[in-house]
Length: 108
Image 1 (cartoon, rainbow, N blue to C red):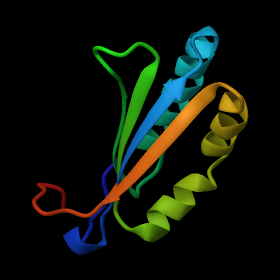
Image 2 (image 1 turned 180 degrees about the vertical axis):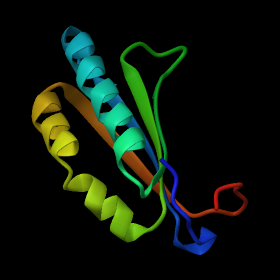
Image 3 (image 1 turned 45 degrees about the horizontal axis):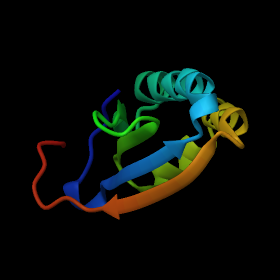
């Protein structure tokens, strides 16, 4: 979904996840559901992409854009996000999260 946003308020996250190979399919299933529900059901989510690295097996990325910090915090409390957190517990070897702000974007 889209919401009106002030560019300076945007919360942009790039998250890299390394998943244990034996848990790949369980992770993908949980991540797809979370990504779909986030983008379809949350007005403050401007973009929620779930991506797989083209060269490194079991490496995934989220590219998330929220209208503001309140939308980001609300996302973290949704039932689908809480289910996702429980479902992927123990499946991930490493997570690296980057928070960015827009220099140029066509959002808003």
